[in-house]
Structure formats: C-alpha cells, structure tokens
Image (cartoon, rainbow, N blue to C red):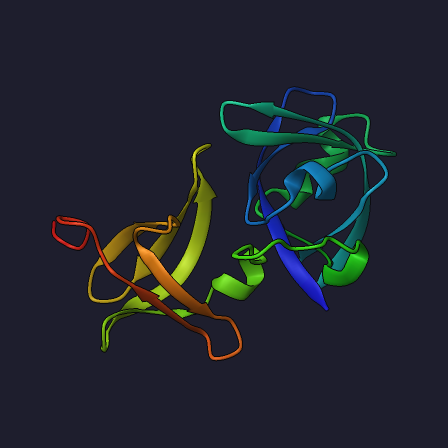
Length: 167
C-alpha cells in the first residue's frame, strides 16, 4: 500500500534540489539516501532515489540520484511523493500512529463531531492535527487533550483545553 509522504513545493537553486513539505511520519527514515519515492504528475509516475536530505526553514530539502540540475526536476513541482507503507518495518510504541492512519479520522468532543483530520505538522514538542469541519481547529496531540484514538473506526475523542475550540 502506498502512502503520501510529502509534496514537492518548489525547486531550490539550480542543481536539482527540491523543497518538500512533509505529510509523513518517520521522515528521518523515509528521506534517507537510498530510499525510493514515487512522484506522480499527470498520471505519470517517476521513481526517485534520494541522494541527499537536509532541513531548511522547516522544509525537507531533497536531492535525487540522476538529477543534477533544475531542468531535470522542475516539471515535478507540485507533485505528491508516495512510498510503500510497509517499505520498512517500523515498530510503533504505545500511542504512536502512522500519519496515514490519523488523517481522515473524525474528531469528537464527547459525542459531537467537530471535523476530520486533514493534515499533521510537527512542532518539535508534539504533533498538531489540523481538523476541518465547520471551522478549522489545531489540536495538539498531547495526553491532556487526546483521550482515545480508534484507527480502525477512524474515530478520535478529545477533551479540549479551555479556548481550544473557540476562535
């Protein structure tokens, strides 16, 4: 099963480096040299083998084998990057989840659905889930807020801190 791991948001410089916004967990493993990612543009899938990875201003900067200048990669701007989910056996600890399992889950405050998780971003201290319903909410993935996660049932129950769901 393929999962989305990021989006090529732009090129960087003239040597074929790209800026990638991560949509994935375990980027320290997924973006390591030698890992193979797939980019899809207009129904055409291109395999890309990671040659180099670094962080810059919150984005992942990637170079790929066989890509040596901007002309080799520019056509992939905006492309979603995917990878085989079971590509590596990553043992999850208790209360750890794949991003792909969380995205799409419906978030409930008690019995009231407040929206679905549409994306996840890392803050350093904890992940933050973007939940879109009538309004957009940023839900921190911390024990004080997230009470239960049912991946199979696509259901997350939270107890919001004061002001979390207010605008």
